[in-house]
Amino acid sequence: MKIVIVEGYTVNPGDLNWENIATFGELIVYERTSEHLIVERCKDADIILSNKLPFNRETILALPKTKLICVLATGYNIIDIKAAREKNISVCNVPAYGIASVAQHTFALLLELTNHVGIHAKSVVDGEWQHAPDWCYTKTPIIEIADKILGIIGFGNIGQQVACTVSRIHQRA
Image (cartoon, rainbow, N blue to C red; front, side):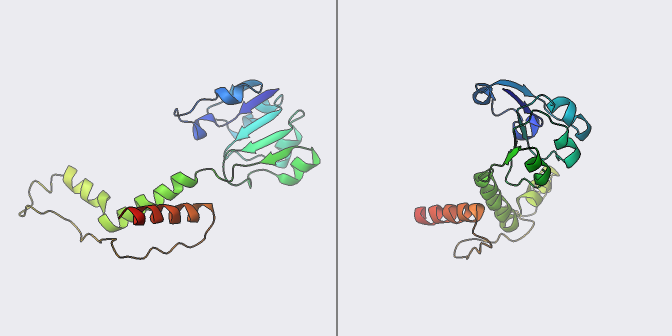
């Protein structure tokens, strides 16, 4: 079985390895693939792993051996599903992809909104703190999150992960 990963760098910028996938067949990993190279690189592939590279009707119809296209992300809107069905190509995705990372990013953005870390970091790099007239230095007021209510719009996988994290923080406090 031939497995082709067309956007290896996008999903693995160096922190993972492909050894487990390679146990299922011959594995070829392309760091990046442009749309005009998809057919050339995937024409002999039984399985294609992609991320954001669009597979339109023309491309899918030009893949004679492909049995599965897996989108290594939450959606699969980049795949022409109708064309894939006509060719009996299964299409799947990774619905739980990035849940923890996106929830963590939610907290990073929340803290940026309350603590303005970016503004303060830049001002320190620019030397403004060194010349501040007071020992206590701040460019903006710090908004304390204690006793605040966090509203979560949507309660899918990511919303639930954010809620669980808030719950764990609250239990430790």
